[in-house]
Length: 596
Image (cartoon, rainbow, N blue to C red; front, side):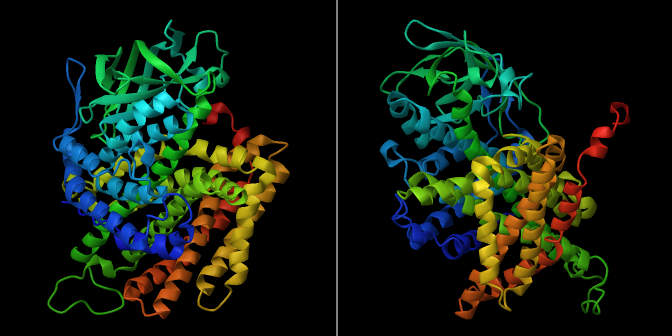
């Protein structure tokens, strides 16, 4: 039997003390996010995740979804009622526009909610997460009619949403899409083709499913420049939102997956389905990326969420499981063995996972806050700086948090020994569920290439230069004795990151393979520095609270030591990453195909 306790207090500390949310009270929606309101919202979110969603996690894994002969898909027992309660609680529209029925609270709170929901039940959390992505795309690119018709229903949870990009021959390379869109006389389009790997493509949770579909209009150019985005509802609505006739869209199959069994991953067939253009013709890829960029942040949080879930269960097991004797002291009186928590290697494992979790939570929430600022600030310079940070950090959050998150789930499984390999403890499900986050919404190798090939040189390197300065200024300002365990490793990591960046400038422009070969290591090097920077900021805030005699001082003191362990044992990996980057691509590219 697995456990989960939402880290509400730890999240509030990040939001209130590290990110200082109250400093942004002038932004739309932030005035309503007073500390007591934020505490109440996240407290209730944590309770719902623990009490309603977590008990369904194992059920969803065992039962999975079912495709019936008539094309209906039913979700696991309990999912439908939980979704109804989730929607009724206003959670889907937490950060939605109040003009369309949302609560208008900061997106950073929705990001925190996402972590709690995903830890409790990752498969369930994908359904409302996709609806939120559809809201973002339609809100930014849809017509007034589309906004009025779809946004209130999506934000209320009455209707669900999806995004349809992938086809059997077109994954990362969207230019290979074959789905066609033929113009109809009434201004709509007839959509024909098939899409695969469509999360939530068909299910029984909502009255309607709003599909956002990439397709090529007849006569449009080949490649990504000729792709448009369409809204294709499962059931065609009237202008007043009432449901009419079924559209010509159906689920042809359910994918049999390694994990997230409670999430319906569908092959979707469009047989002349009626769709309406969203945004400009032939600009569908950029419109869809509005949705995908938000989704990539959400997937990064999935990596953190599974790491947190696995950590909590491994730490609890380590306190209960007795094996061997402590090396540094005699065993406990009256017992044949000590809890495995006394052993240094178990402590190393748990400290590494927890150290990542705390910093990753701060990084994810800081990035979500930048999304808020980039959208809502009235100051041009502030808005531009936040947009730069958001663009720079999105591939880092997605790639690093899911890669390291998966590694942490496997490490947590190892704490259980053989008991981690059997289904009874539930830990093996965490491993299976976490694996997909490294693949979808752009595989992590693509995130690394995006960081190196697009984000670093964008606007003459403006974003990365600003990040280097921000970290360097912090290091220079806080070289005091209390923060020395954090500042030293952070400073070294920043030096390694700068050296790697300069090496790319000198060696990747003339030979792009050098950049591509080192991209994944660069992404992780960048991520380590970003996580180390967050730890330094966390330590500074904790130091201040401890000095004030804060009631949380005991926990904060423990976290401070966890942070020191992260800086001592994880941050030195920046040197390893730098060495790999500067090895270049020569040997890799010299390998004959037969040798691989």
